[in-house]
Amino acid sequence: MNSQYTENQYEDIQFHDSSYINVSTLNSPTDFASHWHTYGEFVLCLTPEKTECTVSSEKFFLKQNDLLMIWPCELHSIESAQKGSLLIVQFPGHMLSCTSEFHMLQDFLTHRHLLSAEESPQQARQAAQFLYRIQELSASSEPFRDTRKQICLMELLLLLGQDFTPPSPQGGEPAQSSHNTRVLQKLSRACSYISQNCEKNISLEDAAAYAGFSKYHFSRIFKEYMNTSFTAYLTSQRIQKALSLFAQPELSITDAVFLSGFGSVASFNRSFKQQMGCTPSEYRSRMREEDAQK
Image (tube, rainbow, N blue to C red; front, side):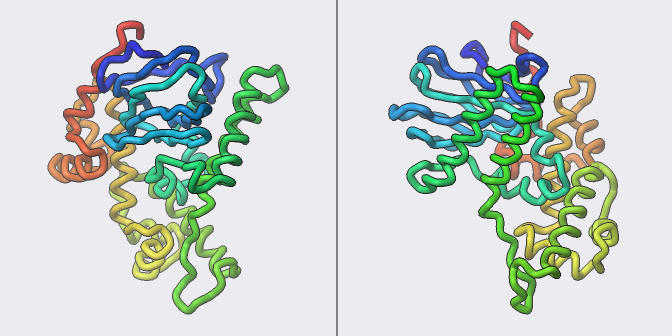
């Protein structure tokens, strides 16, 4: 990461030593213009001085031990940061869905951007420990160090998702009942199926059958456990698919629309603007602002 990116620039991150996880710190006072990348990024504030950041048009003023979470394809910038004030860990977006269970957490996680040390001191302290361990491993020669870094990162994601507590089924069964566990296992398989096949013409009936539910039972429990509807979840996965297709310059926006599973350009534009806060054309234009050093 450097301060030479122009406004809304696409950043093509070069990871060190062919590692899946990149670690860096600020060596001088600096700021970064609004940019984005297909990788996730955790930013830990190390010093008492406040650091001003923006993620998807929302302002954050980081205090010591606060953790800023920037998810893949989100526009973000740093307006002011002091030397040595930030520890930055970048990771590939596929780690958010590397297991079927993580698919259930993905929407929950990516709607959250700040872990406040003041509001959640214990969780923030644990999160910082995982990031420090990743930093330590990056500088070490331990065997399987990259695997160890990935394990730390997955532990951190699980920590951030610990507040995700699906409601008990109707009838008041305990949250940890064997029935509830089976339901969660089936739903996690369904979420993985939806994500991996979102570009296809899959229906509620298809997902229900794959998970082993009736159509109406699946629709009800999906909404109850996932806090979103099947249709909304499928749409969000298709938008993520379209974002990955935008990185292929030979494909037009219309190509991306249909390759990601949308039935019309109009429905895609409407859903995209609602989720991303800008039009597909505006977003695509940012990707074409290639770094001169690329």
